[in-house]
Length: 171
Ligand code: HEC
Image 1 (tube, rainbow, N blue to C red):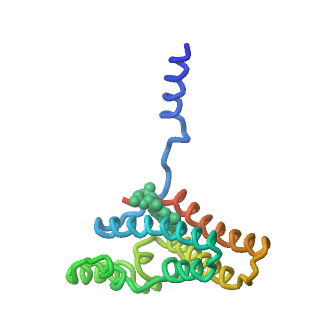
Image 2: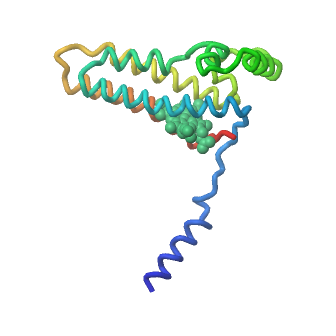
Image 3: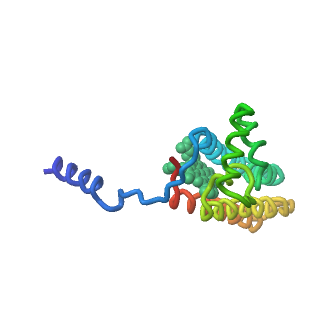
């Protein structure tokens, strides 16, 4: 009996609507997908560095990580070069992108995102920069209230990570 309940639970899991992945698909060239996901994994490391810095009471370093690694970033060619893409590839991608999207005003990999994902990317960079501002404003000796402010600003940043992940996927 227990075995069948197990099977039924698994089958329900597979067929239930909760399993449907209706996130919006972002299609990008293969090289960009690899770099985009690498950048994303980097963001998890950044969050870890930030949390460690906070736990060490090093608010300046927490702010530094957010500003330098989660802010608005560099132009697309600089980002692609930092990932070691060969110059002709970079030139091809940048030319292709400018032809597809005249009037781009976004930096780095954000340029490959559709408009509504770019809006979330902007929210993310803004939230990270706000976190940096809050972290820099902490005064010593640190009070519980200061920690609360810092963690609230960090949580507001993580909220945007989650909002984007539940809305989009890349292919
Ligand atoms: C503008 C949208 C957006 C924001 C903001 C964003 N991500 Fe992502 N992230 C994505 C998308 C899209 C994927 C691919 C998901 C998929 O295809 O299932 C992804 C994938 C990832 C992955 C998996 C990487 C892999 O190798 O598969 C990690 C880890 C990740 N993001 C971490 C983060 C963290 C941490 C933050 C915030 C600090 C963040 N992301 C902010 C859009 C975003």
